[in-house]
Structures are given as structure tokens and as C-alpha cells.
Length: 348
Picture (cartoon, rainbow, N blue to C red):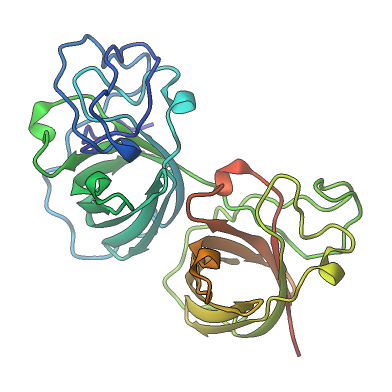
């Protein structure tokens, strides 16, 4: 793996890092860990065999678009707070720190995204220079005292499957401190499938049902698809993303309430509407090979029933059905590896 940039995530996640090298509890941190971090003089920051993070490239960015949309997609990440005795690469940190799910959308050299820290949603906006993605972040919490903003810089690994760097909280420490990297992200494989078939087995397990393979490894292309396979009306069922829910189980299609979906495809961009009970929803996403992923919102008269989050579904080989899941903000993400919860079939 190429060396990764040592950038900083200006504020850390609320975790008591019981790992080697993290000798000081972030007692001043707030929700999501992006609170104030006091400087320390600990001896942490040893790599423990992990690759060192290099400084960002100083070369001017080329004017053309990258060959692949390497930043596009969903990422599982950890952030431990930018401090002298914190290093996200140290042994045990990945398992002990709280997950920070990230979804990025890349358009040429511009990247936007969302992330979650606890119950606080955040946004990312930045640009790519070589293998470095840097820009601004904003975290909005119900308790405004926990809301934060600042800048960030992360570097893509050589295999384009992970990034490393940090966030800098406004008014806090900057990269000139030279501390160890505090933010590490790993790309998630989106659960997909080939041809949809009615499975056998008990609810909550795949049983004899086909297992969804990993997402396509082919790089995205700039040309538009030959056909607008996502365009049109779909009948679907959505049973909630959980370990004991599998929309493919026998009887689910018949027993679950219909979720009608209408999609509009424009090249590789897709927008749409859907309805869950009396609540209308919207979908916005992009196509990469046979996968449609993006964001959803559901607006209900009872605001407690409203929700938002991300989704990812894969088109079957006959272009007549899709399978995947919706991931509610603040809930389980694709990294949980639960069975698919959303199944759609094209209507004639």
C-alpha cells in the first residue's frame, strides 16, 4: 500500500482509546469526538507496522478528469482525534473506535459527501489533487454546542481501497503540528446480485437463497449506458435492514406492503420518487456498472416517522429487477453485512 497522507480530522470521535500509544483520555471531547482536544506529550503515534502517511503532494493538479472515480462510493472509517499521542493506525484502534460511515460522490475532480458521527450528520466538500482529497467539513448536531466545522485532507492508497488523513477543527490544531494521522477509511463492497430468483429458507437466513456477490470491480466509464434500464415504474418491497430480515425469504413479497417506485434515468444520473404507506420519498443517485447508489429521504406528516439515509441496489442480469438495501442515517451501514432488505421488480 502506498504511504498515506498525514492530515488531521480536527476533532475526534468519542471513544476511550484503550490502545497502545493512546495514553490520554479525550476528556474534553463532545458528542462525535469533534470537541476540543488538549495537546499532550505522550509517546504514542508509533505505527506498529502500519504504513507512514506522507505529506500532501505539492504538484499542481492536472486539468483533465481522473481515469476512474476512485473516491466515489461508501466507506467505513475511524477517527480518533488529532493529538500528539493518537495514531489511528495503532493496533486495536480500528476495532475499538466507533464507526464513522462516509458516502462520497465524485464528479471529475470535485467530491461531495456525507458522514455520520453518532447521531450527528455531517457534510464534506472538496477537490482532488493527484491522490489527495481536501476541503471543508461541517457537522450538525441537535445540540448545537456539539456542531463543528473545519477543513480536512486525506490521501488515497495505491490500491484505491482506503484513505488516510485527518480533519482540522476551526480554531484548533492544523497540519503544521505534524501529528500522526487520525482518520482512516476503507472502501465498502456493495452487496449485489445477479439474476433475481425466489429463494428457499427461513426468515432471517439465506437458506438455499443465492448469496449476493461483491460489487463489480470494473472501473466506471464516462460514456452513457446503451439503454436506460433504470428508467420506469417498479413494484418493490422493503423490510428494514437488520440481521434477521431478508426480503428474499418465502412469503415476504406477498406479506410486505408494496413500495411503488418511479425512476428517471439521465445517462448515469438517476432521480426518483417512492411511497411507503402515506409517506412520500425521493431518491437521488448515480450508476456504476450495474449498481445504483445514492441518497433517499422519506417525509411523513408525523415527523417522527420521517427518515433519510443512503441506498445501494444492483440490477439483475435481465434488467427486470433490482436487489439491495436502504441504510438509515444513524443506523447500520453496509459494513454490517446483513441480508438485502429492498427488492424491486419492473412493472409493465
